[in-house]
Length: 218
Image (tube, rainbow, N blue to C red):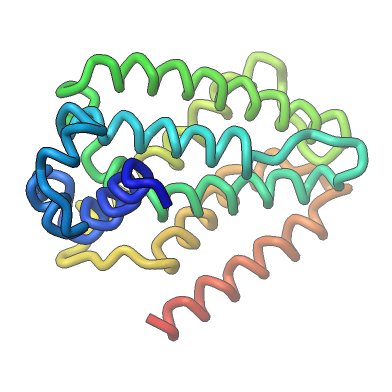
């Protein structure tokens, strides 16, 4: 692995474990056993590292794991894959969403990139929901589409922050993210058609079982 990639991966690990505010570039260099000068050869400052991390996040979600609407895939499977992809990405890059407003305020370039990526996510999410409606999995008026997309993005973006504010000494593990998936399923339930209700309930039961298993494992 190249030094630049090692710096990114070490930064993600340290930011997640200790909190971004508590980690400096010197900490990252020491963790890797390299000189600060070597780190600055690849990145100008910590904000530059965070921007690169977000670009990796965007590639990870949008290119590698965001499900593509396809006639060969069952529509309900599409939204299940979407939820898995989003919350796996949130778990990997959880430091980012634990302190999102501050990070964006400190780094205008990151803010621009964030808005750009989120616009693409909204578009893909809209396409996915429309495909579910066309397949008689969901039912909603066209005027409701943008609000449904916004609510889904709100849960995805701020679930972690909400959870942390509601619990003392909150440990972030798989159960937290599976609980977030269950919240999305509650929000979607009223829009599920009678035709798809059985499959939807089965999917929800699967996530409830996974959530209970994760609580036991923790």
